[in-house]
Amino acid sequence: MVVKIPFNLMSVNQGREGLEVIFRYGNAWYKLPWDEVPDRYKELYVVYLKLSGIEVPEWLRTYDVDTVDISAIDIEIDLNKCIEIPENYPIGA
Image (cartoon, rainbow, N blue to C red; front, side):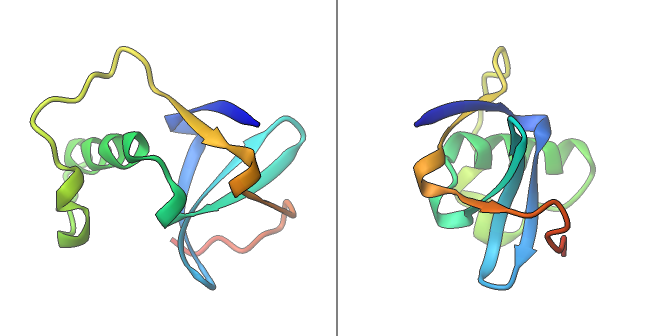
């Protein structure tokens, strides 16, 4: 099932298996491995880093594009690729 999650309600986290994005949908929390995260999120994340005055890491430079349309900030996520996590899931990054 594909759902739309606003960019600002998603967080990058350093999990035990590497980078992931965590977010709440309905009454549950989910994590999505970084390699499954849509490019749209990664592009907006680069914009967020730049606006926050944080240097964009080398591994994210691919997503540093010239023009980013921010008229809509919803990210389409396939919940079938996500793992449900408990509310007390450890946050590392």
